[in-house]
Length: 479
Image (tube, rainbow, N blue to C red):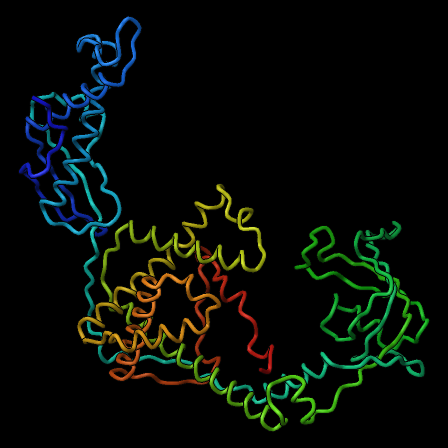
């Protein structure tokens, strides 16, 4: 009669559960005697089929020779691995547990091997991560303060001035000295000043010929631009400066230096007129008034959105104080991985070599630094989901599909989008919006002037948010 491969499915085991910290369930599993014997016999059978020994045909090695050659302890260890894996899986199914990640063996494996006797029962301990149970204190009636962001009254004017500067015509000037706002064409050589009694040393990379320089006071190192102001075309001059302490080139940071400068040409900017023709050139609008109206509305909407974000962040901060939850390590590690993956994608899009940044040596520290933000994000997500459930604030299918269509319109190739993930993300976003609106409607948000609330000091263990570093200014484009 053919032997049945080792399996413990449908075999009733004694399983004792224990609630552990960090959202884990401890399992004490008693493996029946027949299971340990079946596993051991299956291991010997498997090895006898595959083992090769001189003087014996494959599959014909006597049992006692096989055990002698492979070692009793090695065979027991292999059988025990089978027993542990299958019995844990069966125990999870038997107890109807919803688990996260992989089970963990809590008993000492080597000790189990020494105790293991085929044909006798075996008891061991394991643990599994399970979805966390969240407890929310009173979240209705939250009282917070948030900064109100108002549009910069100079924003529209600044955009138009910037566009004028981009389209300025450079006109050569010969009848006056160089002044701020000009464009100067210069030759220069920078030299380090080591100290009294020593000759200045030329600084590598600190020289140029026919260098076109915008005469703005915040350009170049302090003192350089101011030293050129008042120079005549063809004039040469030596300017004393000091490199800033935070200068990226460490060997000259904070050091005194001099620059020998020759002013070869002065050009002044002739700006285009601010009129309807200019508006048509830089935007989709036919009149300057229409462009200004559009920019005004845009900056007002951006300020409104920033105020809304500030209110929601304040509500979330207050909400997290009402949250009590033990997070499983599996969820934390998954969230850290997602955050680092997102950061890597953003950096790669900027042309940064991610492989040089996320090296094997740096990755453990980056993961550790990301944990506080991951834990915060998980607590927020769980709290939002719990409120959405308790207050019946879930988005309906029509809202979800409408938002999905909006998102797909912004994508170059909608066919490449994973619809299931998009559906999940959109649903989560809509539910979050509903919860935030509910918290605001059922709480008190006091708006205070921008700059009133002191920002918390960034934690040294918190990794920077690459998104905040890569976002462009809202005033970069008029369209």
